[in-house]
Length: 142
Image 1 (cartoon, rainbow, N blue to C red):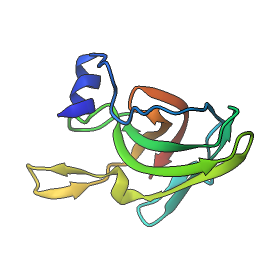
Image 2 (image 1 turned 90 degrees about the vertical axis):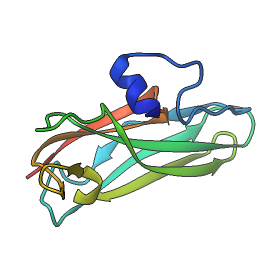
Image 3 (image 1 turned 90 degrees about the horizontal axis):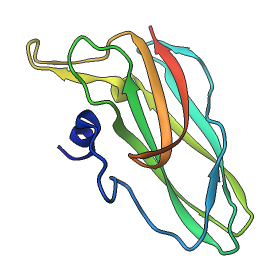
């Protein structure tokens, strides 16, 4: 079950899923989407700046989680849908981009035996681990 079960049960692990250590520090800017509403055939692009605020060069794994705000079936609070590893020199900033389509919003409905993407509100959560969300942005699937 991993981080999904821990989130549901509100249990804080010693080391959350995706936790890592670094010799430097990173700052996440505000995430933005290229469109607030998408259809089943659209792709949504989420971008955010990540800056190495430390004195050493380093790597950071930026993680994208998706949260379905209202579903007809029970779903995890958030689901990992992508990650990007960026290498930044001390003081360097880079824009990180994620592109997702409706397949990243689907869940398996065992009663119907099909994958379903229900229209509604979703939230993209971006951070350093499943427990350390730095920025979030909402969007709608029509």
